[in-house]
Length: 185
Image 1: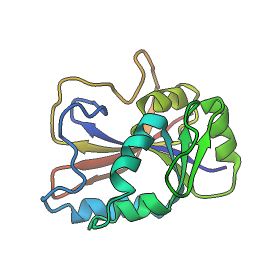
Image 2: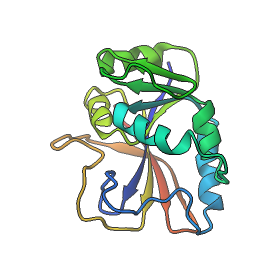
Image 3: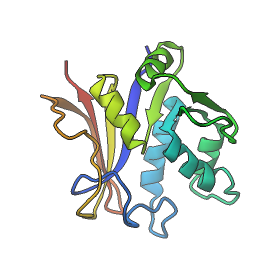
């Protein structure tokens, strides 16, 4: 069975909702070590899952970018993308498939298909549904050294998980840290 991984950029105070300009993937700071880690993870996945809003945001920015020194545009343009949406008719981005059924059932079916990791990012409502359904196999958190003071969190209000096991932990030159966590049964 494929692994479902939630990868999120997150503030020190736990917000994954970008209400301020704290996340800049094309920053002028040296992010070479951070990008190397992102690309290492990209090589472990062959499916990118999002909700409609995140998909449209990503498509509007990355699909038309022609001079991207980060390599993120190349990855997003080539990876198989799956967008959960009951309203979208045409994804308008190559290698994209619309999943219009129940999100939990659609992701359960996707996990049964052969392949590498399925990664989702952003898509807070979708992530909450997948977390509550117990479908997430790993959480990968890139923590940015900022406090936003507001915004939605990774886990739904009231959700409790007794234990998460630390998988990996790294720090990068730009001040971002990365930790992965695996839910314990």
